[in-house]
Image 1 (cartoon, one colour):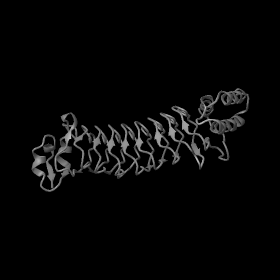
Image 2 (image 1 turned 180 degrees about the horizontal axis):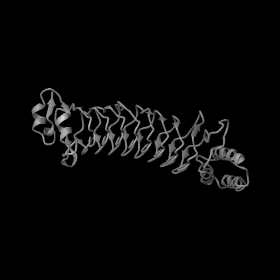
Image 3 (image 1 turned 135 degrees about the vertical axis):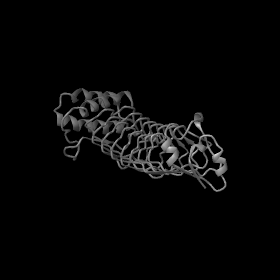
Length: 312
C-alpha cells in the first residue's frame, strides 16, 4: 500500500469512532473494499477497528442485506488476509468473497476463535492457508476448500468440534500435525490418492470416524495420527510406508480390522506399537489382513507379532 493511500484510510478511520454503531459497521465494509482497491491486503489499521466492532457482545447488527448477521465481505482484488486478521471476532458469522476473488493466501490464525462462524467457502484462487487459520471455530460445520490447495497445515481446523463436512481437494499432498484434532463430528471415509504425508495427531479425537481408507502411496504417517478415534472400526493402510508413527491407534477400542497391503511389515517409529502395549483387548480383538504369502514375515516381526489374529 502506498503512503498516500494509507493516509486516506487513516483519515477515514479517525472519523469512524464518532459514528453510530450501524453506520460504523457499514464503514468497516467500505474500508475493506477501499483496501482491496488501493492495495493487495486488508490494511492493518482497518483490521484493528474491525476486530473491536466484531468482538462487542450482544446481537450483531447487519452488514449489507443480511439482517441480524455479522458479515465480512472481502473485495475482489484483496490478495491476502494477514495472520490474526479476524482472530477472536466472536460476532463474525459469515465471510463472503467476491465471485472474481483474487485472494491467494489466508494467514496463520486469521479466523481462529471465531466462535459464531458456521460455514466458509474459500475462493478457488487460494493456494495457501496458514497454521491454525480456523482453529477453535466451534460452530463451524461446513468448509469448501479450493481445488488447487496442496497443504492443510498444522492445527488448521483443530477444535472445530461441529465440523461435519469438508471437501478434500484432489491436489492435496499433505495434512499437517493436529490439522483436525478434536473435530468430533467429522466423518471422512477416504483421503485423496495424492496425499503423501499425514502429520502427528492429524485426526486425533475425531470421535465420529468409523472407517478410513488411506492413500496407497502415502509415505509418512505420523505418530498418534488416529489416537482416541473411539468409533473407528476399520482402516486400510498405505502400501508404501517404510516407517509408521508410534501408537497410531492408541485409544481406539472399537478398531477390529486393519488392512495392511505391504508384503514387508513396516517398521514402527521408536520401536513402538500401534496400540498401547498395555491394551491387551486391542491386540486380542483386532484382526490384521495381509497379502497372501506374507504371514510368516508378520508373525516373526517385532510389534506385528503381538496381534492374535493375522489373516492372509
